[in-house]
Image 1 (tube, rainbow, N blue to C red):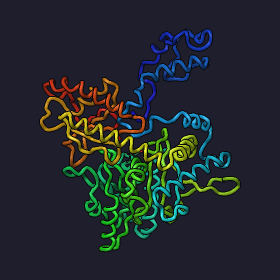
Image 2: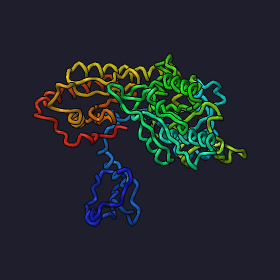
Image 3: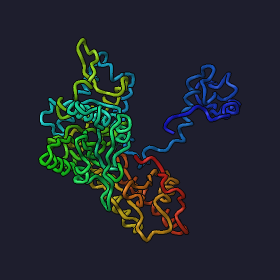
Image 4: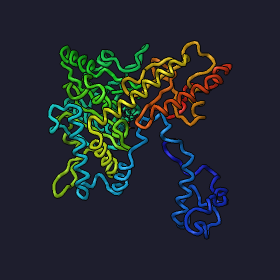
Length: 474
Ligand SMILES: Cc1ncc(COP(=O)(O)O)c(C=O)c1O
């Protein structure tokens, strides 16, 4: 449940009678002295306990969480160097918003924005504006808000009186775009999947545009299968629309993952501020930006793309510091870790790390294909991510069975059904990140090989609810 409720009805009194489940070896001479029963779980304990006792209780419960390195469902960084961890520890008390108190942290944020503006080929990197966020979701909300506000300013004679804004995107967009449309009352116009096309089609997107379209979202790359959407073709199709009708529709690139992959591995791919129609770009610093969660980035090509009235001022060293954010307080550690990683790796370092992930993805995809039971929908040659399904002659089991069996070996590989118009298609997705080495990929393959004979002996797939994904997948 995303929204947590209080304690389950009726469990608390018996919980209180539980004996304290703590190893007496922990902590000082007797960390449980004076405690006769376990502390309550769903209300504040009446009094304090020694730190070693509290630590032991929390630590032991967390052992039941999964092993994040074996989580092939997540795009989010699960390994950083110890030095990054030390820096983050040193900065965990710094509040990002307090730029007056922590001017050097603020300066590192500014440098990260400048580096990204340069990396994404802003025509004048010094003129690009941007900010750090808690992740891509917040960055997408900010970018969407800017699109909506610019459209509203252009249509002040019709909005809010009669016009209703819409946003055009592929049905494969991440849930943050559904949230944006819901929270800010924008109509989502979704291009469905068709046949073997699992993301947005430029012409189909243009066909959905009208005078109330605040923008079109292009995704680099898609959460569902790791494929890059054709951003340049989308911009060309919108150029043609403008020539025909005069409608000038801006593009936002959701580069949550790909904006930190393509600049290093696909230098010839034109998807960024080199395209004049691209007005803003976001990325997740905590995905292929290689930083622990949560940090994201939102950048606009120039101040003209970010309406001034959305920017708030905080007092900074006696002057005015513009900020654009949904949050106020937020940790500075992740921003510092992002700067550390930029400095540590440089372009060549990022290229080496991302290429290694892509090599692992491509190699693993190919080896899985060679097993004979699976068909690859993507091959890990764009994002280091691939999606696969079972071949038509596999009748004994399905992708949900595979996902469950791999989980028995500790691997988290999500299985889920595609959206319209490919609800008939269920897939597994493997996200290869830094830290998922070729050795680990070999072990995953071995475990998959081990499960296959049993899966093939099933009389039919065991999943009852095909709509229920086996784990978090977007
Ligand atoms: C394309 C895309 N956009 C946005 C997001 C949301 O990112 P975050 O988790 O950083 O909020 C994701 C997350 O997977 C994504 O894949």
